[in-house]
Image (tube, rainbow, N blue to C red; front, side, top):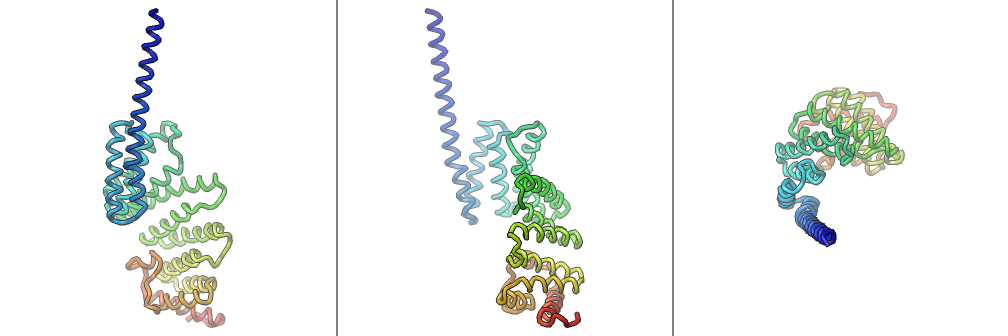
Length: 298
């Protein structure tokens, strides 16, 4: 009958459409395996040639995704973010910035439409990536603005989780660093103080944790640069007290310019961070006060 023929024709059409959809999905998954997964593997290896290969794979899949999917699709966002990260590692900062900004534009559009395709964690990662690029481009005012936006998202996520966040601490470290580079000493010290408070909770109250000692030394160096040698002395003394005997000796030796070893911290390693002479003066005072607590400040 006509009704049976029509039903049969509709079924055949549906089967063909289903098979076409399955074929399309299989091709996409094959491309993801060939390019996205390969890109992630190369990126994780962290070598110059691997970053080049990762960028090649991300670009290939991004080109395909833009022809097959909506330009604001979640896959596009993921690829733009990963490409931005790789370009940053390659020190191609302007290109990295463009990739991150394209990603941010899609995220903000989705956010404005009430879409739940992305969350605060996605937004905070991209904002942090942009801030890092601006930081390395020495555009400190804009970097600080983006770090603050990322921090706002990270604080909200930490509040929901009910525990301190390593992301918040990392961003605050960079905020302290940018304030320091911009000559805003009080703001830098305030951010570092919050780092110390949050990190102490995160490590279970272990005052002798190496990260806490390191951040105290960072604070001491900032105080030295600001000419506040007495405060620097107190900070270095506190750092020394938290060290083991061997660690204390190594710290004092390194700060006095001995041992021949390079600094282990990025802050200290950066050229022009502090006056070596001032650091040695303050650390010498710290050493005297630690060995002889009653000795007057020179």
